[in-house]
Length: 55
Image 1 (cartoon, rainbow, N blue to C red):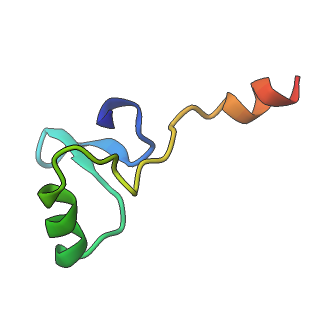
Image 2: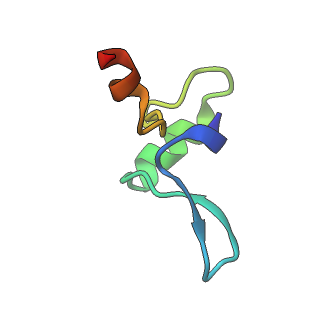
């Protein structure tokens, strides 16, 4: 699911993909505690979704 999220970006310093969603330690702990729920920070990274909808 993260692979197509707008917050999932490559970090050149760590040389790996990371989540860039704005969350604190408590938010992260809650997110990691969920085993089957969807990520509340997920945002579709498809920039053209709105354009296709308007056509």
